[in-house]
Image 1: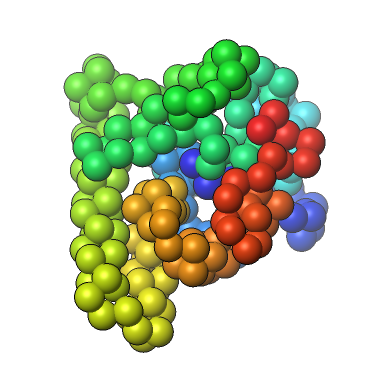
Image 2 (image 1 turned 180 degrees about the vertical axis):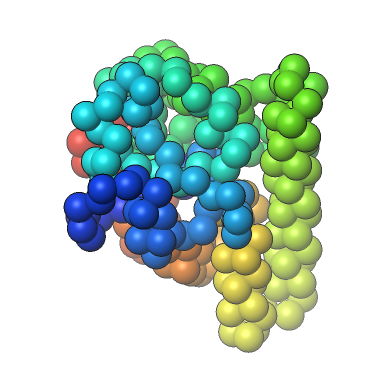
Length: 230
Ligand SMILES: [Zn+2]
């Protein structure tokens, strides 16, 4: 999952929904959890739910962006920042693994403590569930879509990688950057291009608001995030 940096509050808000354009400007038009690119219905998402923390309803540092699937699964579930990994406080990139089947799971090399925190984030957003585990029809459809898109983007990234292997040009590299930004799913691009540091540096740079503290600037290897659990 992409670690993001929303930066300082651009202004005080009297309605949290007004923060949406600034959030999109800072961290891109992506769901902060499933990483989908969403052009409509991308909501301002309260990390700690506003129903349980009304004092944080207008607090910029409590905002991320969420798709309807992640947002409604998360709902009013309580979040304790000490007990969970989150894209705005940890280097979530090291904590999860993605594969060509669209699956997401905790990375295999995590300590027991980190593994629990990673599992909690998957549970919070339903990213650990197969689509048919959602009993609500609308959520099932949204989860199917979320799942299908992950597979599509994995395949797209693989095709770009294959093309780059036969025609390694600057133009094709720039086209791959642009395609990735349009397609979303930062972590999938980073995984498919795990041996191509140049492309990985480009992805880190072109996906707005990716936390630069989380990656070695020359090797792109993940770094522990200052103040985070990982
Ligand atoms: Zn989502």
